[in-house]
Amino acid sequence: MKFFSGFSLKGEEELFERWLVKGDTVVAGFSYGAIKAFEDVYRGDGRVDRLLLFSPAFFQFKPRRYIELQLDSFRKNRDAYIDKFLERSAYPCDYSVMESYRDSRSDIDDLEFLLNYEWKIAEIEEVLERGTRIEVFTGSKDKIVDSGSIVDFFSGTVPCYEIKGAGHILKLAKEQGDWIL
Image (tube, rainbow, N blue to C red; front, side):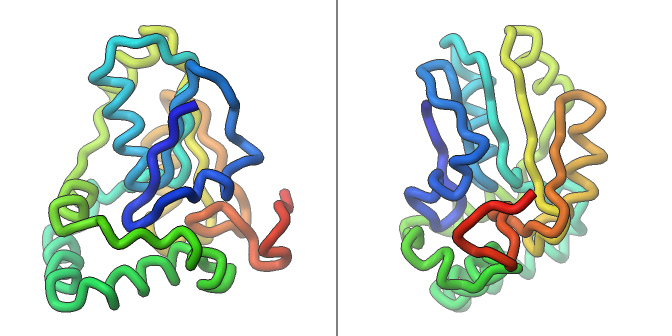
């Protein structure tokens, strides 16, 4: 399995263990990594049986001002921006869930790419036509992306699972170390 990490993260695939499928023909990604995973499959020519997108970064309906504010905040104080991002990603769990996955190699170009990325149904359909099964997972209490917009956009084309009460990392506050569905 090939896994693509989220913005400012590394090694967080264990957070999604419950849904990960092991195998050479599986690609998965979380948030920003979901974009990278999709692009890898879309632009690649290898066989991929399953593409798993966990809380895909989805900002294409946000106003330009929102994107500019995010970029300005990152430029002003990169570390504070990443801390706040990880805190919001962990919600409704504590920030401590994310600390061990923090990776400060992400830069302004990464953030600009993810904020401006546009998902296209035609590209998704092209990947499906190649025989790849795409599944999307999102949390109903996500503080990073609007899970309703994700479900609305993807559900007409691919299976989309919204986990009630879960945030961006698809965990619930009740038991931070265990999954509850």
